[in-house]
Length: 275
Image 1 (cartoon, rainbow, N blue to C red):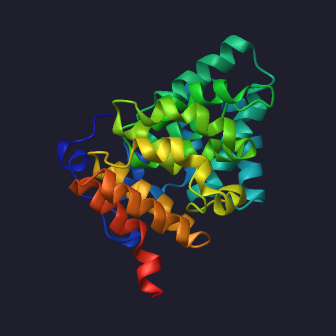
Image 2 (cartoon, one colour):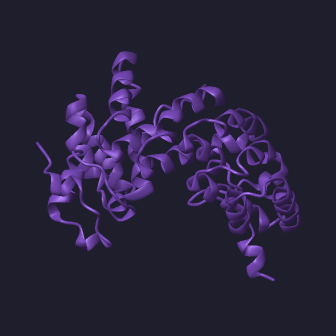
């Protein structure tokens, strides 16, 4: 089915009830990407699975997957993505390695951002090293779609936090990547508090562990990265305000550029508010 230009170039509704039925239909058929958070949250993943699984030759597993999704009340948003990806991993355990690789590859490259989100959570066997997990997730961290990029760091954050010192060492290289999305991942994935996720207590108490990454990005030209660095430090300021102020003073002296100024302003907003 060809999606018309008007739908492809839409701005996106401001509330769920305003999403046109035709847009929802295309989203649930896997023919379209969401264009904003409202659409992303409105996608019914059970409907999407009904449309997608036959194309992967997994329709015999549809009843099982949908039944489990309903039991867990997983239709939309993060819960649905996590549940769908977990169930897909379960059914693929009974398939050949060739079939499993084929399905994961198709999900990873699917036109639907929601399907790519499933793929970001899939393929996380317990015997994979941190290096292997990062290698797998890098494609999703660099995805052009905001939703896939957010799911990318969420899908691996627990693995990163379990060995934060090693994670920082591995992510230093990401912090120097030419792609701003990859650089942003290096910071966002290990925010002390983060969004929609568990805190990393060690970084809340010892934010200096992340200095090798933060110092690289203190004057990053990308607003996307600047915001992430500023938010990282604002997280840290809620438990280690003096450390954040000392760091910002040092950066101000070392890097007298607009990018650093913007980062410092965002980093100290909670401190300033509490004065």
